[in-house]
Length: 70
Image 1 (cartoon, rainbow, N blue to C red):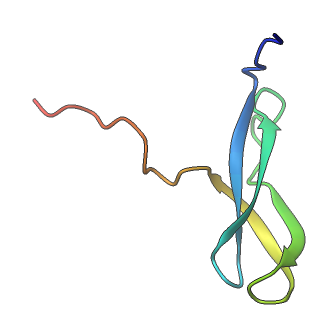
Image 2 (cartoon, rainbow, N blue to C red):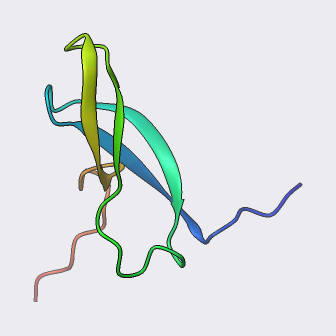
């Protein structure tokens, strides 16, 4: 079995028109230091037109481990 490449991180792309995450992609975290968020122009099936998609976390904080109180 191939080894999983840990340098790449899975991100979601959120549409500026509808606010939905339709697309997911991976980015190389070592080469993107100091760069802003990834923005792409892709088709939004909900708005039925092309829109600007901006990078966000894949899970938007749903499955992250929270710090313990105390």
